[in-house]
Length: 385
Image (cartoon, rainbow, N blue to C red; front, side, top):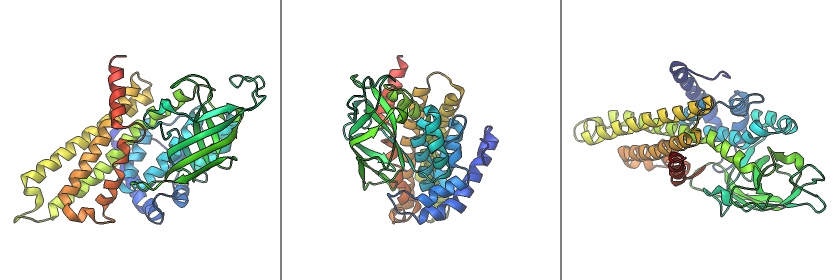
């Protein structure tokens, strides 16, 4: 399944195949995992099926359209598999796009096979959606000389904390963004590749509403050197934003997959459930709600595809289009899942019901990788650029 799907017919066929694969091979492995913990057997299965190699390629770029197809299709049938795949891609993408030959050789085969767990460590207690406010700092090692250049550069020590990091603290390697220069806001930030066994690196899991693994990381003089730098010293913030430009439309695809699952469940339920001497679908309040859910979901899917296609084609305005896709799709999914719960009634609130699961899953995407309010700010700024 390594060939990306391009035409609409191929996309639909590919989506159907991925949904069936997820239900047959991934859902049983996901069900054996513990909520809030990395499911390594699930990652190994994703690697065995060749799905991780499509988001962590050993050669060539990640195609945004293929990433969106994967995330939407897996989300429909198994949100745990979708999230595991997406987090591997997010954590490893800076190395895919900007890593050295040594970094790529050491980590990409392991991450693509599901043997190593990757994580993207950007957010901090005081720097969530306002990522440029990060305070994790890299102090030059004594005698390092100029750490901004190769002459005599020995390395740095990382001090500070990261919070709300997916896959933390159970990942094997982290792409960590730290302040190495005197610049304020986005200036002076560098990306480092930090293995989990570095001395001074700690962390603990966080118990959150959503079921995917999330935690904190603490840096008490963690050593990093020039060989750990991803990209260029002082250019890490641009690297982080470039990664998010790719992944934001695919967050929208994740949301569309959940919305489609909730919509299909609601259509089936409204056709079977009888009330007031007929099926629910014959009640205008229900039928009109289903029509609204379907229309918004279709529109969200098209917006996500357009943003992904623009990214792949290198078109201008990708930041705004990515923001639009994430904003509209995540807000739509919240509306559709909430409406589906209303149509199903109390049964949807029972622990283990599909909609109870989706209701917990759907809330977080409106916050992570830039909250909805941040996406609106990005869109507005781009209008006047």
